Length: 322
Image (tube, rainbow, N blue to C red; front, top):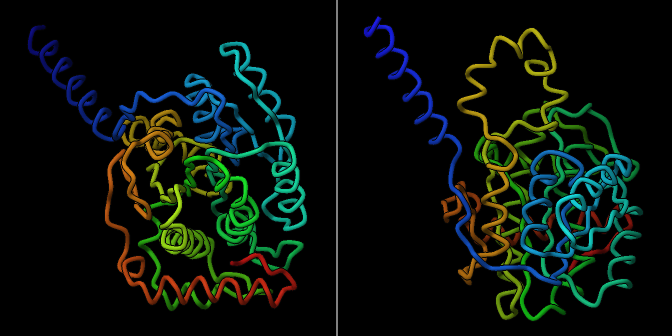
């Protein structure tokens, strides 16, 4: 009996240690955000929803920028059950430059300044199709949309005494090289695979983070990318291995241990919003600075890719760049 009891205790202890390890870092910042306006895209579920609750706990004025207004209003209602903070729901569809422009105009008109913009919304393994703006769905949702949104909100962000732009990236950005990224960065072009589209969008987002940080170096606006880790969110809803309930069931014990809860994934994002570290252009993992892939360290690549993005947007009839 003692043999089995000891084995059970040791196994349980090992699983606990592994779970704590994979849960990642915890934000230890104590700063509050009273009356500070924070925009979170994709806040109707997952990391965005979890982050909204963490921000409410700090007293922030929260803008839930979402495509699904029904779910966003449900999140708002849940937040208000626990916290007495201003929470606004605003419609935002990153697959539509028109929707992005309308959202940004609304924010710039309604609020004097914005303390933080969290570009959190994203898709993975989305159907391979073009948006109304004739860009790959994954690429526009994960990169071009946030790129345009950020530029349109810069006036409100820089109006704040100090502000933060946080781009939620992924370790997947290491899975693609710059040549592959360049081949996807064109209008009316579908990516060859779901995986490469996602990886390309995240590499592009980190490159953008680096460039914008350099552009805003003489301001009080910090721009950082965050790797939240693998989290149990709706982003995997299209992924065959996880959307199949039988395949999902086979993985459950592994997922319990190695996959983060959204609240755990939101910790590094919260850290990027609250940290007193004045470094900009960082790639943050587990609440500390990490080293991104090699292309992101090449200043020429960073500038060239920004210029390419501006070029394709201008060719599509939209000039959002500096």
